[in-house]
Length: 233
Image 1 (cartoon, helix red, strand yellow):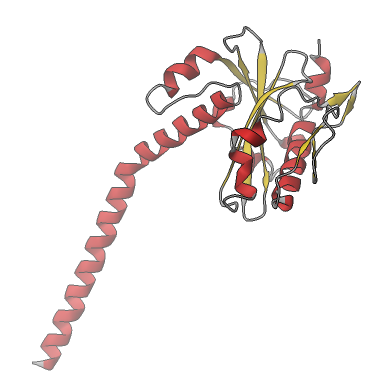
Image 2 (cartoon, rainbow, N blue to C red):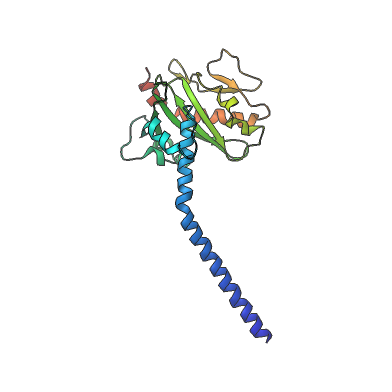
């Protein structure tokens, strides 16, 4: 009886494990299209926010089609690469490659004010994990039109403040270049001089995240240097 009982338990456990594994695999397969759709909408929403367009889940796709006029891919020399979809380029994967092998996505947009802007994705490291976002530039390829930043796990009230309007609102109007020298944006602990066209205030209590964001902007936008200089107005 004991042997039969043990065999029954073993068979029952095996069947249960197999059944649960099958159900989980099926659920993952069925949910994958919805998850991919959610990621697509979130990405489009963030791109739109970098040009000041607030979107909801319900109207993101429509607004994206309205404002984002083009996407294209560059190589490290600022030359267009044919046959690639800018939207599907994963920046994190590209950053693992040597710079000369990286693909650099660019998006063009026309906001309601008629300004013709380009949007560049950025990704780097904060205190606790990845930080990322989009930087839009005016047609002079030098002046920031708007930004959108986000994070995976920065501290609420500290590093997480990079995703607030108060922090992001300091970037419009700031400059990337001094003549033809790429300066990028510096994040100053204790506050930037209001006359500093390259400087913004660091987050109080979030110095490491602030510096991570500064490095992210420099490292990512610097790769577009040749393209930006060749297309400046």
